[in-house]
Image 1 (cartoon, rainbow, N blue to C red):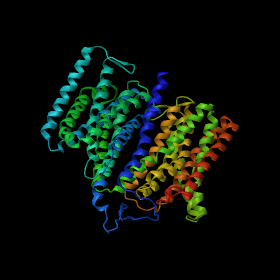
Image 2 (image 1 turned 180 degrees about the vertical axis):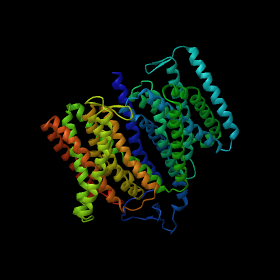
Image 3 (image 1 turned 60 degrees about the horizontal axis):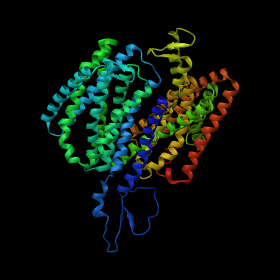
Length: 597
């Protein structure tokens, strides 16, 4: 009963965040500006070159111009709350890898080293943020206060007696409590920073960009918390739940800091220094010593250094973007994130059907292959029929993609085969035990990820152009992504019989498209030139990957795998056809007709 309630709570938190984002976008666009597909304007309303609608009075003066500046930056409290809730939920993505693998003791030490690097990088950012407010003395005082505070907390826990948490007892439980407490504490500063940014001069666009930056920043922080928990035997579900809990102060603090921005600005230097001091003390006193017990000092140092470098590079990237961005870019960033809903929903639907009807492995693998074959042939056939690409270059790109993926996957399988200890189990190079079928399924999901990355480039070009109808564009894009998520979930479920792993795989694939789309926005791609060639190459990669899967499915049960193949083909064609009908009979794709194809 506790297991079911825990998973229901986790699903509700993630669902509320996703649904809240869609509501927030609609509300914020209504309160700020309206930009839609071209249409005939009626009455006395005029739309100027910026897409802002104003009312033209009878005496010839524009009554909207005087209030435009005031209304432009207006952001509602519910918008801030819902966006920061989604930002906090992103922390749970850091636990996704642990749905697939179990930590070897040596890797537990390396994971602790990575967690130490992430926490150190976060402390550096907090110190820099506090100094940016012009109160360095308060930052230093906060660092010292944080170190003293965490030392007193540790002594208090030791005097209290044996502490237990998540089946962890003694000194290990004390360390887990301190890590979770510190990561939760530092979320207060991030939440106040987001609230103040929404109240700034640039209003919604600036707040949205800061929210996205911290959401991406939350993922490795969630990974750090999950690594600390997973290295001590905590389940992936509990690790994900506690990762999200550590970020819940962000939405709780963002709203009051948005309302009372000036007051919160005065306390930020001390608060950021305090959180940084707690982190530094914990890393040096607890996290690094544990890492050195399980792994060599050079491995731990390398992992920590790479983590710090990654976090600093991520911060530098968003700092550079914030210097030169527009409202269209900010909207494009958020719309790009929503493009991941389709695969997540498709994977969830597949898992629900598989559990409800107890679908067999052969049928699931056949369905995954059928969907993949349709995805692999859909866009190439469109290009061929519309004469946008010649037959010879199309076949060449398909063959090139198939050959590259085949050579890569074959090399991985051969490398793993050399180290096998039995006919079934493969101790992979990463020391994670894995069956041949599971490894093949992961490689096939990698081909789907390549397909999602290729499509995400086109979506990244489209997202800034779909400013007003951006949230409506999510409908055709989600329909287009449903079969991709179903294929990945079906493939993983058929190989591992793990519903949680299947959902995590679908969520991870859903994250590929937004990642590629945001990359296209940052690279300032503004046309679709050459993207069809990349897409055809990715389509070719699906064919050999799922050719192996369907071959193994036929070996298990010819009838069930054939039925699954037919069901997968029918489902994929239905979703893609519905997407095409939505684009033909609604204005949702008008601003970017080439994005969803």
